[in-house]
Image (cartoon, rainbow, N blue to C red; front, side, top):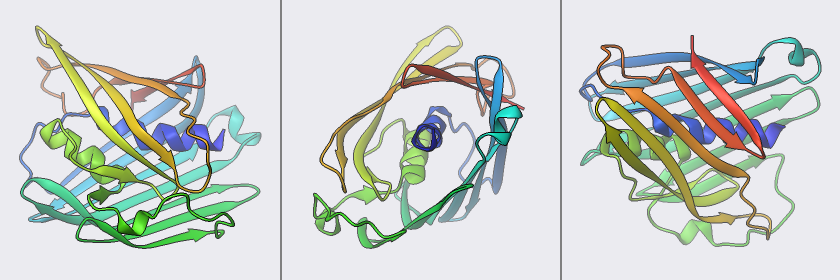
Length: 232
């Protein structure tokens, strides 16, 4: 369940379309998260743009009757600079909490390379890849912003436990824009399996509406379950 919700956060936001100038100061949106008719949580996303600097954050919280059975919360933060229209991070942090445990990841970047990776609790396994020597790495939220603003992502993504490439396929018919996200070159840093449970993320956005910055509904299929995100 925890891994499922983490993947939900990490992948859903790339389906947004940034349709305003980068000089805008702050953007915010809230979603409820449902499986079928069951409300399992809420998600808040904030983007702050200040000249050549950016900060973006996500807040995930449990909600509904399932919260009595499974309590969780997640906080995700990325900050860095905008260089030649690309979002280049300095720092990424995520905190995941349940009743039984708390997991934290912090990644520091220097010139699109990882300079430090801090995990709590510490990973007992040895890394399967020399991630400190790989060039062109950014965190998941920065990858999302790169796709939002340019429709492409020239970097590999590292989230502290995995490396992967994120790309986006766009189709448009009349005023309806359909988006599908693909995950390629997937590699687990600390384990030797390459299993990917995420099947697809699809959204349809009506460009004819004035309030079209964030889509009203998003569908994500993961491990046979379909998550629906609805703007509040």
